[in-house]
Length: 460
Image (cartoon, rainbow, N blue to C red; front, top):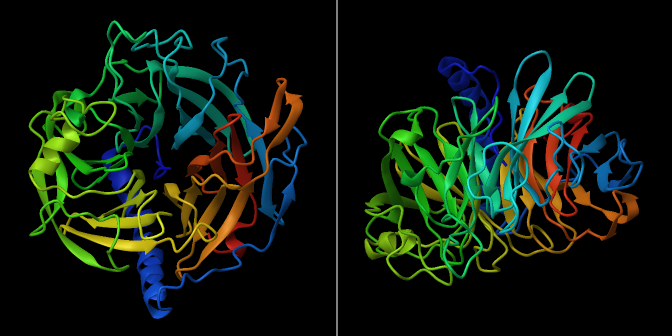
């Protein structure tokens, strides 16, 4: 999930203004949450949110695909297999996403597809014809509440999981893999990169190699500095930053570094850190950002191993990331004593890391993944657990609640798809530029929803 962009074409002054306004309320719920957890002796405060959840009919299919609070409604669109405007079929495995304002009450969504080796989809820019992942771009009418169309915007990549928007109005999509090309693979080119996708037209389909080759997940850019922060989804993962040589032009290269805890070489953040703890940060160099670790582990002098050799810190499966109020918030999906997840905050101005939240168990929060900020100050958290994944809200007062729950069971009503998909993860949550619609994906069978309702009456 990502921080929404507020204007297009985005000038830098406008982006900074809106990002700081939105981000100013982001720190409040997180700080309050950590405080409330400490006051409660580690117990997590839980709110009613918008009230109890109940089955809600999709306005597109008529099926009860979601559980939502009373008063909220939604429509689904962009299903796997749907014909797009360029006559191609919509790929599956919907994941990370961002919303952009293109004027006239229209929003553009750029959506990832977390697919592996196979045949590239679409007719546009293609990196590797033997890879089936990539991105699609969708248009939505915010005033009418209507989906308008879709097209392919990048093809030939693998496991496009998350990513992040840029201050210059584009989407950075990340490959969650380091698969190689070679005689034993069907792939024609190496993978494990970040690609930039513009709002108009197709991507160049050329990797941003200087941002590193590793099991990428999400990206968050500090608009004040242009520094790119990157998460890595591995059992032993790093948190990285990329300092571009030219702000706003990542293709010109720059310097990749990995976070370390100052004075504590190879510090392991996965367990034993108290909620609210503040850790001083140092950054160590990655001399060879294009050297991937071996697919089966983290040996062989790859990016993670280089950082670890310099004393970098270890995290547990870093996934979602978002920027606001001068802070970078990111999730460790399997971090913590229960391995059910942590939420971290990095403060670039103070160069400190703070543990905001640690899940006490899967019945409270089952592996936090994508995160995004509500225009009204709450934090939206996508759940990656395997038991009825939900969308959670975190209030300004530090209370956690469920806002939506997956209820997808199909018997061929949509494109002949049949099965029980209630264990499929939710992903890519992002608000529309006007703040009225919350978009997110159900990864399998693969579709996007737009949810609206009485936001002002509740906690998001």
